Image (cartoon, helix red, strand yellow):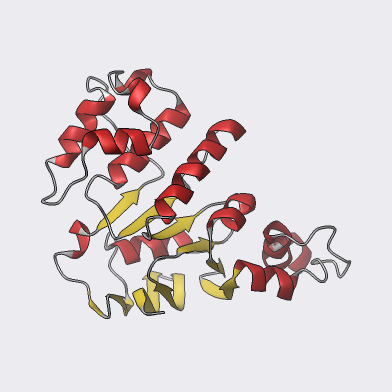
Length: 247
């Protein structure tokens, strides 16, 4: 498959700290790609360089086979971990406000339906629950009909029911052949939503592949050398990044 987004030899240094150290991977069009890792692994810095929020110390990011141009930001959507919303606007008014920032936009009623926001469209932003807020942030990321969608820990802080509701929405978005880049600390979430993953630690990619291949390759034994109780992505993650077992 042709890569929609490709990073080549990305490096980000801060004085004496190398946060991202020669990271390369390609993301085919139409898949959900998970970039996983423990806190401090460098994944957020990598994502922000991919999004164009941070500049790289060295390395390149290619979109549709070429360096990114000014149109890149028109064609991507980003759901940040934290976004400040104006308390005196309703959910519908917030979507309308963000809609004015783009040339190509999605119909508001369609967004409200896709993200299960119709029932709360006239509520003010400071009167909605945490799960509803995350769905609104997802709707904002979709307002410009993006070809590429970045979801940065989209279900953090949600209760199990709200999280599963969000997963259903993301699966629906996937079915529309959009390309998604996901970061999450919930391995169940990554296993359900992602087609391919890369795991980072200490600023480097330490493993990558399809979810099925990663489970098959790394779930024979856990980090202590004992058989894995279950063949799942969480045990893969713990085996590869279990610092307390490696240090």
